[in-house]
Image 1 (cartoon, helix red, strand yellow):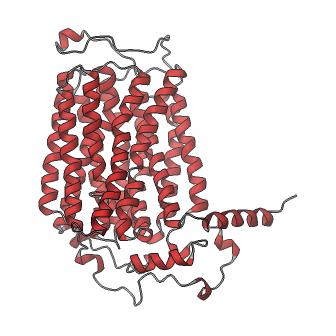
Image 2 (tube, helix red, strand yellow; image 1 turned 30 degrees about the vertical axis):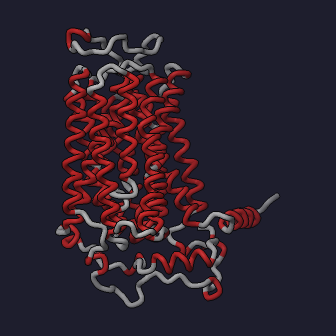
Image 3 (cartoon, one colour; image 1 turned 45 degrees about the vertical axis):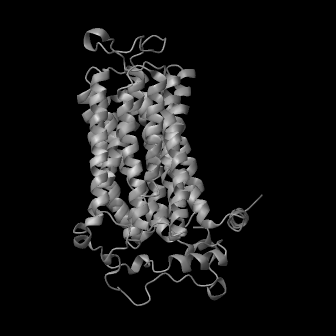
Amino acid sequence: MATITDKTEHIVSWREKLGKGCMPQRYVLGLMGFLAVVNAYTMRNCLSLAITEMVIYHKHHDVAIDPNACPGEIQIRNHTIDYDNEFDWDEKTQGYILSAFYWGYVLTHIPGGLMAERLGGKHVLGIGILGTSVFTLLTPVAARAGPWWLVFVRFIEGFGEGMTFPALNALLARWVPPLERGKLGSLVFAGNQIGIVMSNVLAGLMLKYNEGSWASVFYFFGSLGVIWYIFWCLLCYNDPGVHPFITQTEKEYLFESIGGIKKRDHLPPTPWLRIFSSWPVWALIIGQIGHDWSLFTIQADLPKYMKSVLKFSVAQNGFLSSLPFMMMWITAMVSGWWSDFLLKREVYNVSTVRKLFTSIASFGPGLGVLAASYAGCNRILVMVLFTVGMSLMGFFYPSLKVNALDLSPNYAGTMMALVNGIGAISGIITPTLVGFLIPNSTLLEWRRVFWLAGVVIVITNVIFIMKGSAEVQPWNDIQPAVEDETVTWKSDKDEKEKPQSEQIV
């Protein structure tokens, strides 16, 4: 019989072989970070489609309410209504449920960023995703207990997931060289698009072929989050200096290219006054608000528009609602490579690239979504306009999304917490506001929603262009807290051999 020591040695041997394989460890971290965001967004987003099949549809006289209503009937699953599985929630109640996630989400950004900088991002991120997974598994129980129980569960999910991006930013600051930020930053952060695609497509198929079993959607995605957490604990570490299997070549390359990142214990106190009096910080926050307003509007409410206005079936809804986000992910990958290419060739400086790409990510979606609302009932044209417009939002990832790393590498976690946390307030406002703006879910009511989203993203982009920057801010390195406080990753031969129990932490 194998002993505990034998099993431990086997795990260490397996991880060491994987760690010293052909893939550099910064790419392993990037891939696992990408999967973290994928899981976070599948759990966040799966309710947006599932709720269209959980809620009882009350038939309206479309022509009397909206003379521009599209022809045809809204497709409802052909089964006897079971009030244990179907809920009579109006649009306002649905708005509260969809926005509840963001009530918790905004609260843990700054605490998550501070913990990630002081304690390391590995466990801050891991515990946050694990907590969201557990409460995703509890979603069916909460829904059947009542709408306000579901609001509570979604609040707790957001509370756990609010630490995701601050922790990832703190990790990327210690693992990703400046000239790879566009590429690896896009890979990691654009995982949200793949998460939305997966949740829409897979949830649509599950809702179609497991009629009446909407709960399976939450069991499936919650389980995937738990599995990810296990692999995350085994494969990833806070920084190259504590990674037991990283090659010396990669370690030295990262030290030379990143350098100057303060050790967690030696960071001076966060310069809050300097941060809040910085125009580039406020320009970034305002730009993030505009982006999130448009993204959360489409992310949370596009499935409802597809069902109530365009009258797609649930399977069609899941597939077509995912198309804009699939294209956005492709655009994010291409624009990330393009961003690094322009910077390496010194075609433009960093600030110009960030502002140019952010502008594409703002005007493209704003015009595309608004045009789609005027395409009426032409289903093909509507989907083309939604897809093309939202795909251009992919330029956001190698620009606005990594701009916090440009401004302050030392306080990357706190910066991401501040920017993403304030921006996420849009997620609280938009679903609730949409619920009030579309009481009858008519085409004309939805058009007001899209006009508002377009105006917000364009105005906030103009402010970012005027006041934004990609230069490291003076308060990033105010004063040394102790001597020799920069990260020094010693060579393996100079380090004392660690006990085996420490290597497998």
